[in-house]
Structures are given as C-alpha cells and as structure tokens.
Image (cartoon, rainbow, N blue to C red; front, side, top):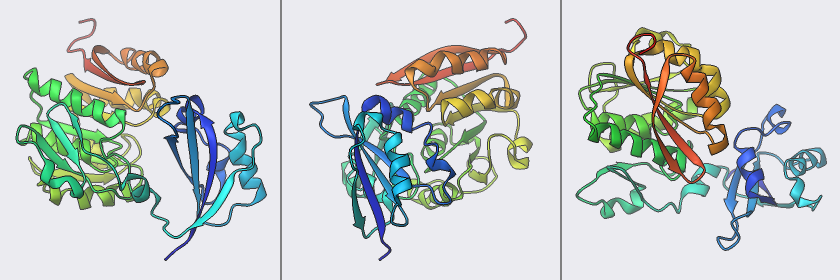
Length: 306
C-alpha cells in the first residue's frame, strides 16, 4: 500500500471557497498536494476544515505555504499524519449519498437499489475524478438540463467542457439520445474515468450520433472539438477565471440560437462571467441557484442586435 501524508488545518468558509480557485504558491510545487475542504460542524456554518494530502512527508516550507492559505488559523501548527491510501478522491467520496437533481438520480454503486422509477438514474463510482453530482455546480447543471428538456429544447450537437467523471455528458445524452456528443477535459485521468463510467450508464463511446466521443483538450483548442462546430449545446462546468478567458472561443463555437450552461462560479462572480459572454453576443435566459453556486443559462443571439 502506498503511503501519503495528511495535513489538517481549521479554516473559514470564505477561505475554503477561495481555495477552490487558487492554491498559489503550492501550485508551483513539482507535485502539488490535493486539497479538500469540508464543513467541520453543521451547527457552525462558518467553521470549515482543510485537509491537504501530500505524496511525500511535507517539509517545514510546505507547511508554512499551506498555513499561509488560511490566515484565520493564526499560525496554529497543522496536524500531520501518515495514511495508507493515496486515492484521496475515493476516500472523500466513498460515503456519498445519492442526490436528486431535476430529472436525475445520481448514485454510487452502493445505492443502486434505491433508484426511483420516475428518475433517470446515473451511476458514478467514487473515484479519481471530480463530478459525482454532489457539488452544487454539477447538480445545478443537471437541473438546467432538465429545464431545457422540459421546455421542449432539442439538440443535435453537444459538448461538455471539463467533463470530470463524464456525468453531465451522460445526462445530456439521456435527454437527447440521438445527438452527437463530445466531452473534453484537460486532465487525462478525467478522460480515463469518464470512459470507465460510460458502460455502467449505457453510454456507448464513439463519434456517431448517439455515442460519446472523449477528448483530452484545454478549452476549445483541439482539432476534434473544432471539427464538430457549431454546437447547439455547450456545457462548461469549470471555474470563473477560465470561463471568462474562454468566452470568445466558446461563443464562436456555438451556433446562432445555441444554448450555453455555465457553472463552477460563485455568486459574486456571476455578473463578471455573464458579462464576458454578453460581449460575445449571448443573453442570459435563466439562472439556477444552489447555495452560493449559480448555474447560468445563456443563449446565443440568432442575429446581431436581436
């Protein structure tokens, strides 16, 4: 069994949210730690906990960099322990309860027998990539997809940018099973995990209509992603900064009248993200709020000024 080292520090809710976007200077380490934040006590919503997992015993400098990310700890000495399993994402997700979001019921294999008859069940095993439906960004996208289907929307060419486990791409294909679909991610592990999750959800891999193509890609800059344009549905559950940077390329890849779902942003970032896409000819058509994590529903104008 491979060992890793777990470092624990108390933090505030605001610090936990900030860590989802920037872990400098730890990001510059040869092997950055994996950071996980959790609400330590439900009765104290502002009190959270930071767990950092290192592949090697953390040095004093590493601990100092970690402590600098949580000023509220007041220089407290972090707790360090050796653990035997380095599959940290699996550890954090192993006890996940199923969720209901829109038409969907997302569960791990342990809850396979709990699937409601009136739902579209999606099985995502706790594993090496994020996107099990538990986070508000993912569940918000599931609700948004359901609303589009309930409103009579029809799509024939879809893309899921930053797919993670493949969940949102699977969900879109369940609602529009005859569509062409592609899912991409910058992380090769995510592409592997999405491929592993596809069979359990009845999703066939390939380039034909009704199948899902997977691509390792950063943003829209990949020949396979470009070859499939224009898309009539783009799902982008990433982070606010990359969403703003990607606005020109995503908008260019979207067909006139096409729909766009944006997630991975906090409430105070929503206007900045929406404004970046308005400048590219899109309009906001809806918003789904899940805690402090909104999902923006946008549509590309069919003609300039209309």
